[in-house]
Image (cartoon, rainbow, N blue to C red; front, side):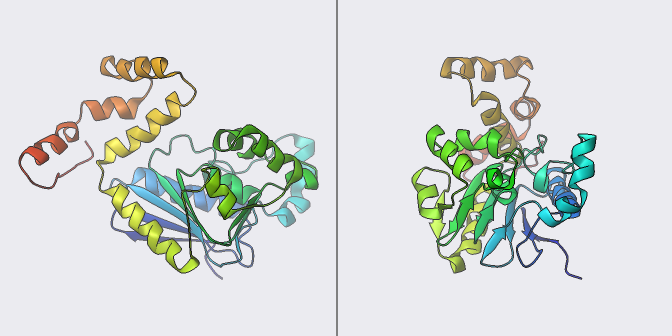
Length: 271
């Protein structure tokens, strides 16, 4: 039996690959395994950046396993408790404690929950033939595993609304036009580029990388003035951003400046 989630470590980078042919649908077990992979990324001090990708070139992920849901959905609807597993669908959309950056390398169609998982990534690279869609309304429900909550933050409101209401597919080129995708590249260059970008990011100080994600999440809906006030509170330990506050008091906080002055490579310890 094939492993549904494959992990490979390259230095400070953890590569997570969905492996459920033919369409990489995410059932409950796979969702839990993906969460465990992202938890390894967060909890292993040697790891600094994650890459989420999938085997195959036609479909990145068809999202939640509707065959499994068809068998269990009636009981779940009656109970009013539909459990997608820790971290939500695919282990990422509701993993609030994950502060290490995640790059998505998309080679094919990201459909429904597959797209929702990508919306929780920090950067998205896509092959030229990739597509993104949220067809849930045509199936009788809503993309509430992260689509409704995030898509209007990533795209103009009217475009986000159109995708939800029509279920149409957005091409990689259109996604890049709106800034949803960072780069559109050929299939054969996709993973090498994701690894190159991950390695470049991993050169940053570990705490600074996590603090950057933490701070951006906290201030995204604040005005510039309010954002300044929130980050300044970190010096008094009152910002509600523990990683940022830890970074300010860490040995690494001065290591970069010392290394620059001494004309050497910094030696970050993550503390």
